[in-house]
Length: 497
Image (tube, rainbow, N blue to C red; front, side, top):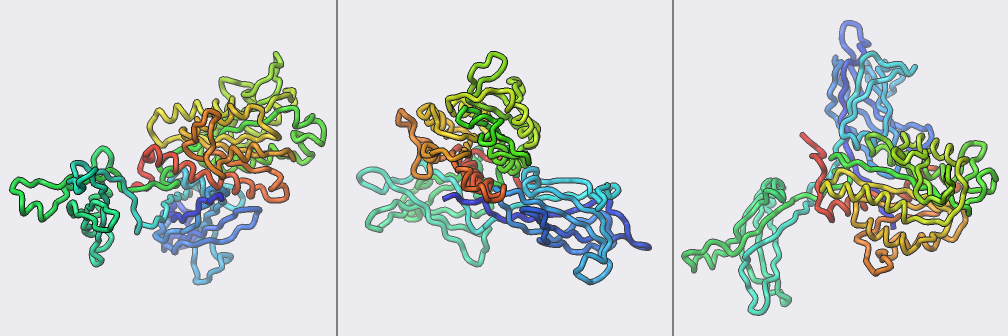
């Protein structure tokens, strides 16, 4: 079952150079946040406080909002000069507004843009700055610990150590922690190895390069032995478990690549029966999938330059079959500018190729894997790759595809497969590891599940947002699972003070 990335973020708002609408004093600004998740219906989410006589306000009240990765959450920040006590904004002076998506804010950490008037003209030199911070449950903490030279409490074999933590209730979360190290016994008669004291501040300062280390002291042994030093040392190397937003706000970029199926089973693109036929209103299932997924993912890539490829077609000028050709026919620069660029490249490519076959996935999976492999060498959580494959049928190179996916499971990479048309997609369900981790033909087990498959026909009568919600629901957890598995931290502090 796919789990959606839902958490709360608080937005901090500040402005500079607001328009002065008052005579004899300065504007008294207030910021109103509206949201739009589908269609053109805006609804109010929250308001800041009113700041009196100020053109450069730093609003103290945080705007709290639910964050969903898998949908585009459109936001509109409106500034008003408030000169009365009514809630209605219709009788207040409008100072300007700014529209963006929540994804744009969290991916940049801090977003500064000009304010715009209703006539789409700039509101003078007015600007608004929005910063975001995730609201976390600070009552829970995760850490990585190890020990060395612990006293052996077992006659046969070695000790089975574990730690117990005790906090003084009146001391607060940052107060003293009494920590006891025991040797576990099946009968419940656990043997005390030693005790030490610490606090949360000390543990949170720990890192792999500068661990927090503590001597385990056994008071009974200390009384009996003159030269007693300790009963072992416990070392804490990490006292934090990063979330998806920690990685995104800490500088991780999501790199989006599209692979389009141009095999003959799609049908002649000139025929209305073809899956590649572009209807009079300019859409088909391929374009709908690109728009749906691309509009969400593009907010998490700073340059918004996306490689787009085709496979299974004969391409000019030699008309050889290719399973990995750029839609813009420029191998040295296959990048398209934004989702619009990918859509335009697809439209331009379609009449220039001959649909052929077979349906081979492995070449394009390996293509993206090479870039993910390069990112892995950086030993940093700075890059994650998402490959969207849109296809109409059964995979021809199933064994090679399974091997390529298993290899990619060890890389910063996820694969989304959208099946268009009415074909039998049983093989795709096998690649999606929801019923157990995928194995390569040689028996190698995937390190993690990185494939999400959905048939487009499930969403034919649904909104564009519904497809994205389904196919992207697992992506945040896949990204977090990978970077935790590799023990990689965000490139920089996601919430610098």
